Each structure stands twice: as C-alpha cells, then as structure tokens.
Image 1 (cartoon, rainbow, N blue to C red):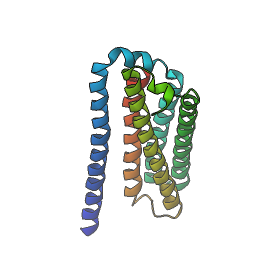
Image 2 (tube, one colour):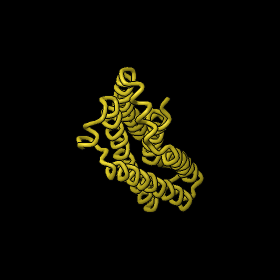
Image 3 (cartoon, one colour):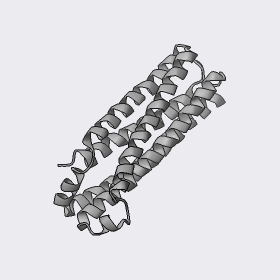
Image 4 (cartoon, one colour):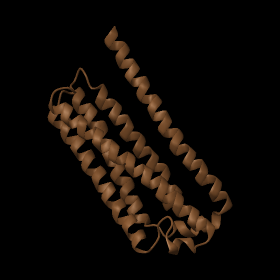
Length: 198
C-alpha cells in the first residue's frame, strides 16, 4: 500500500512541477502576445531575419527525440534493457544536435552584432529590440531546459543499465519522459511564434 501511495505521490508531484513550467512559459507567451499587438509590423519584419529552415530542422529533431523517449518506455515494459538504453541515447544525441544548431544560430546573430544590449540592436526600432529580447530570453530558457532534460535522460540510461529501472519499476523514466515531452511541446509553440510569424 505504501509503495502505491509513493507512486501516486511521485506522479502528482511531477504533474505539479510540469504545471509550474507551463505557467512560466505561458506567461512569456502572453507577454509576447501583448508586445506583438503593439509592434506587429516590426515583429513580422524581424521574424523574417531568423533561419526558418534551421527552425524546421530543430522541430523535426525534437519530435523524433520525443518518439525515442516514448519508445524507451515501451522497451522497458517489454523487458528490453538494451533497447531502452539505445532509444534514450538516441534522444540525448538528438538533444545535443538541437543545442548545436541553436549554438550556430545564436553565434551567427552575435557575429552580426544582434544580441541584448548590443550597440547595433540598440539603434533598431523598439519592436525589433523587444522581439530579439524575447527571442533570446525564451529560446535561451528553452535551451536550458533541454540541457536539464538531457541530464535526466542520461541518469535514466545509467539507472536502466544498473537495473534500477526495469519492467516492474519505471516511474523515474516515465516522469523524465513527461518532462522531455513538455520541453518538446514548448518548442512547438516557440517555433511558429518566432519563425513562422505572420
């Protein structure tokens, strides 16, 4: 009975944590919407400066990584330790590829002198300044969550290899998977707001 209560408590705790993450990014999306209403023309023009192809590639990368994480849970349920570890490793590698793409994207902007507080950006219209402020804040915060998710997935790989995550006990993997899916879902909102803005 006690084990059941711990399991239920862990699941509820995870959902409460995810709710706080939704509130955090939800608040930022509301802020984005408020500024978009004020600076619509400048937001649209500035959004066209972003690399839509790279944004699309990163979207596909995260969608595939979510599939890998879901597949790892299925593998554990089928008592396939090696399969679960392989899927988790694939998700971690894809997370790293996402961050690498983001590094090149940010690096290009910095090379052009476009970053918060830069002289070049400071001379831009207010809407462009706000757009890039939100862009760096939201995508930077999301990248941080990707890093944390990768750490959690690596922990799950280790725990699976040690037999701590197995067919009868995989709540940790399930909760880490939920976190990864949420991070991917958040990107699904970020992508159109910045890269497909109309």
